[in-house]
Length: 286
Image 1 (tube, helix red, strand yellow):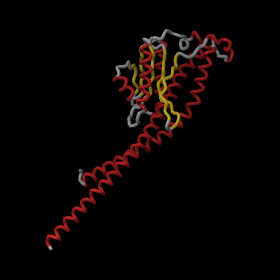
Image 2 (cartoon, rainbow, N blue to C red; image 1 turned 30 degrees about the vertical axis):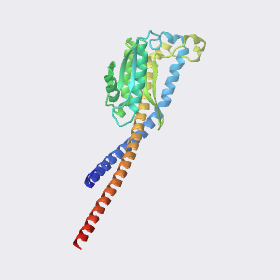
Image 3 (tube, rainbow, N blue to C red; image 1 turned 45 degrees about the vertical axis):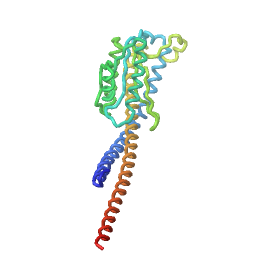
Image 4 (cartoon, one colour; image 1 turned 180 degrees about the horizontal axis):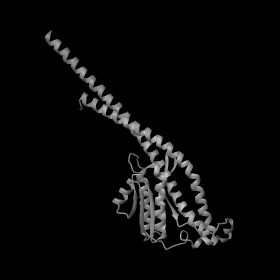
């Protein structure tokens, strides 16, 4: 059994660790509030951009545009949102496993994947699984989240227009509530098109023409999709880290309570032993 001094030292070490845990929890809580405010601002813009893209599926003229035209799918591009840091529980595992499952299903159909991975955790995971990582975006700053989304959007546009990717998916974690984070893999290219619904093509007028509208709209649409996905994922990351730190704080409290109980029992046993020795010595002297 450990001595009293060892128990005291261990209890002091855990108390120090608990202070660090509490500091990390406070930082995550502050970052979460900032991320939620940003997410509330980007969601309406994303929904409007998505609505504009979906409206084009009824426009017959849009079917010949490179971002809409159907292709034989051989190569699939993936943008995967993960974190750069740990201490966020199962957050990274959920999204990487969801993306990996989607890739393996597509690979059985004879399709090859090309990855753009945001976050050090995702880069390490897919490198271990020997996946084709074209670009890795690690150690990103939240202040540069939109700029990074624009860069990824430009890379995606080049890949798709050059024919290196025939479909594009984005894998991210959607924030529903503090306790609900849903990993999702959504297709963003090509844009949906239903040529059989031409009777609805008169709902919207595009100036000067549909092709020019798509040339300007699709890059902005890609940037908005990626920025929204990054905002969703970042909010989930801070939530997961905050909850993880709360759990760690509770565990530290339980360990300290158990150590105090062991310490008191050990000290009581030592005092009882000392009293027994004193009484025994006094009887011998008498």
